Length: 288
Image 1 (cartoon, rainbow, N blue to C red):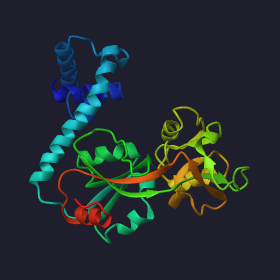
Image 2 (image 1 turned 30 degrees about the vertical axis):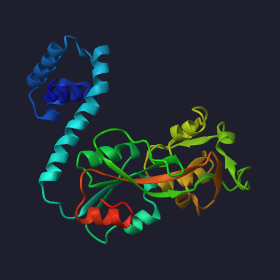
Image 3 (image 1 turned 45 degrees about the vertical axis):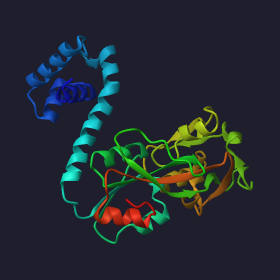
Image 4 (image 1 turned 180 degrees about the vertical axis):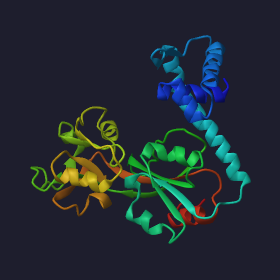
């Protein structure tokens, strides 16, 4: 399958419009129609209905493959360019919000840094495609266990820190005076669903056997301070690394005692490191 045709198809499906896809891709509408027709002929199946423009069942299945395929192609191009080109000045770091621990922030160079705070699932792709020189990702893990990251390209990961995790509660919450809390005992509590700012509820479910942790409020943002303010105001509980949960006004951070998991941060990069990226990796304890 021609990747140019796949990219056209993915754009039409996303925008639900041949004309809007043509505008975004810089093609004529006729060229877009020809791309879709050629792809349908190649696969021997209709991929889109025309009125309205929407994927067919076969088209939906193709979309499941298209994203990873195009990402892998972009990653391959970026990898070759990265090897052939001289290191660019400065440093672009993509990081999940709670991966920006005080130690990581203190290690940043004094100048020349572009910091991109992204949802944690987007960080590996940013590194793979060359949008960032380095990435910082995080998540729950057993002590010294690596994180499970999406397989977007041949990337190198290095553990750069582990912290205790705490449940953030309003100071008036009945459990606020407990010396420790078991995650299983909180499965039916009110939780904040903030997958891009805190530790996702899916991680909590996985640590608790795959059930519980229904959201009371969903926060679609990357600002950890907003998340902690929501928890302090009683809109739901959240699980955070010690450095993010401690010292929040109006809230209490109670240690999680079971299961025995930690907040793990890993550095992600592609190929050999040079310049400011290599320096930062060395400072964080992950030599390139």
